[in-house]
Image (cartoon, rainbow, N blue to C red):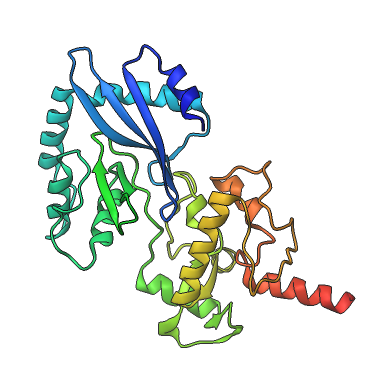
Length: 302
């Protein structure tokens, strides 16, 4: 993205863009924007344009310009006031703590200091995102830790979140996969195991998400899941996030062996959606057991 090119495309539209902002941890990208309405009302905000949960993956200046023009009406003074009233009435945010965060965010400004004290604030923000709200988490300036949060008064997108499963379904997956930790290649205590989706959530879209029901066949479960402990599950998430951002596939113990493709994401394969799963195949983390088998076959040949 080029900020000067975007400025030219928005000339005469009363939309000013100032800088691009990356939130690498969340794999989100924003543009700092000022919307100026015909009545002179101005609003400064930060607009996400790469955001998996919101279904946004805008890649060109032309697409981004068109998107900013399309959402400009939502930043009229009257529209923002009505949106706030409507969402308070809707009451989608449950629990006792998360609504406190949501009420602060209804200023539609960058918020940090005014959040209620809570040891799990990231979870509260995640709840709001998962409810379908568009939220920017901007890294704080001058090397300060944490994020400034900004709620945008946009229509709710389809709830994304991660796939969930019941305790019964989890137990079934663990039983079918014989309680075997794929990374450690050994049977592990059930309570330490997590059913891991081979196809990383960072590359899902609205059509990719599917419910995990007891109606799934054994073959479908075995094809879709592997078992990891929490540490390896988190490690895989970070590796998949880096791959999504930089196009460099992960390794295990630095071994650059891929039974399909190489260490670079194939640029001819889409980054998100079901078709993106093809680009994951061959990566050690996608199917750890298969990767080990293919590597052993290669070693025998040599």
